Image 1: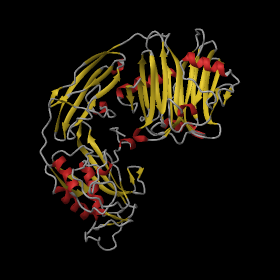
Image 2: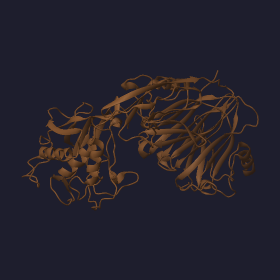
Image 3: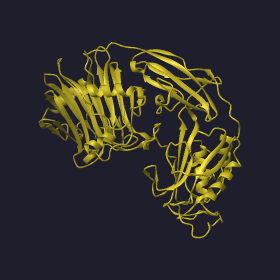
Length: 602
């Protein structure tokens, strides 16, 4: 991921070059080179290498291109790139110490892992880069690892030989990554060009027009430091107002769509130091979302290129709002994939108070596949089991019209009065209408015939009269994939004023509960209608908010999170309908737990 600390998640692994022949393609009429950024400051860039020491693949005689050794291949590759560069010069030097991450030294080495992470058997080389923490446009360090056991290594020209890795073309490719270039054949849209920077080994054995164009674009001209034509403006907002900071350079608004690729930007809160870098906020426009009182403070942005930058700051003032203990969660819902075993969809909710509460719980699968929803891959026949933690099974239902807890007519009438969509007669969806004592409940959904698919689980507060009991939190554990198969939780906040909630998307911590296929790196997006009102990747960004979140978890009795890549948000919500989506960073998949806690109000 994107953390500044030296951890596995903070490594930026460039898309690896894969073994396998790729058809030689003709160059397109337009250049397709892609930039990953950042770039090196102007001047000399030193690559430290000692590739002929222990751990290097053996050379029985001489390499096929008559190179004397592995180091000489790298040195020749640096010369090839220098011919197309202007403001920097690549030079080599002997590496005298063992390679290390974040040591300020750019290094080449042989290995089968990247600082503790094993390299896939099909990967020939991996490039890692580290930005200057105070100038995101500037490269601080690059490390290139050649996978020693990926293939039989040689150095040759001409057609790619299956099973034999050409060190020269791999070196040219990885040095291109170290310069800041990406894969043109993996750009969006995909470009079809002949280039050594394409993602698979091919018959291309030297720099081609597209590679040269990329090098010249990044390093062909001297850099000029940019200047703000409008700095970010300070904002005064009420809790819940959507807040975004932006700025203009050369008279143009800088956004994700209009940003000059040669410029970098970094945001900091609440101080201007490395620890306050907002490392999961990627766009030039800083989207805070629905403002909270803890968001108030100073936000500083740096913009610049590899040779220099300028800064500007803006203040955010957030006015508090009155909350109400009378406001409640009127209903809760979760749409997710339901499977079996660890992929069983498990939805928990808590009834708090002294009196029983009438609740309607539904597990809808086949109806989601019909008009007007038309969702693909729905579960054909969900079976719903309601469990109380201290008692055991409370009720079970397979088909909603064949029910021991209520008649089909009662369920249909209650659904309509609660604002839910109707279930067609004859559908195989499941429903339970039951009066529940205060306590902790779990609704489990499995396929009646072992089938898997998309399902929505809903819990409605359907008390006919006011009660001091209430639904106070929701938790859902399910398998998160991509596309439609992410977890989507819905809640309706009902009452006279806003109320405060804690939202969490748990992944790695599930290992403590013996869930082995947990999601590594959750992302949480909160919507009101179609509008994103808050986005959370890692719960330690901003770092300033972590103590507040830890205190909130302790107050609510939520178990602590063990990994910084999980998501958590404390937020005050006005009455209305909200949805919370949980997905995996970079389309990661796995079991995740989504939780919604209600804070007690005085």
